[in-house]
Image (cartoon, rainbow, N blue to C red; front, side, top):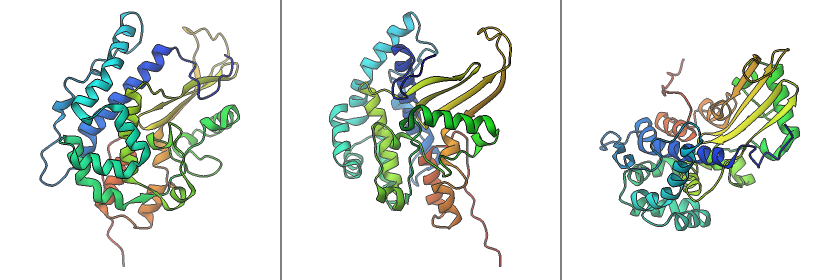
Length: 312
């Protein structure tokens, strides 16, 4: 396989569309179910996902082949119209432009005015989300191109535990909707912090951008005979797979993996030396703030928050 720029996915257009729509569906599920369940608001009923029932992303095919490709194109065409009617209350392009012009202020305005379960939940967490800022050091793996991917692959190959506590150039890094689509984190945000309000809003903006035809970076690189690395952006951030095959025949139906690593966004965002872990160690967050921060960073597993009793 020839090297392609990380920003250009080596997959077919139908595969790229499926990745984008599946990511949009995951964003909707986070907003309808996961976030309200993980951070319930006093006086609000249990999450009601009824507004998702007519979403055009239900029942996406597992593979974009044959008639499934037509279904994907239909879902893609319907999504921005559905978002305007059922969620945003205005055209998706207008919503996105206002977010890009003034992210936090627009999220304030939209959530205050919109009569929708998502807006109501955002209103409920607004003060806490605005008050908590965590340093953000975006993972620049794709911007580093082939040398960066080869360096990451070498670390994955050399240390089976690297995938559980990954580092970029010796430091913890972060990946998520707030670090992609050309989003640059300035020096003040990197040092003083990016608010949870901005992170939550970036997830919604990512959904809107995907509905308007935005794509996600994905691709693959053959590192050596029988060894390769592949990546795709997803709802939680950048997902990376690395594999080395056993020696011998390497036909698709007979090849066997000698080693395999999966590097998920959760391992970057919840690193023991990451922004959230450091904030917890310094006791800068109370239990409610810690729960909201963890929910905003969106781990791929269930979590709980417990306060430690100080020892004399």
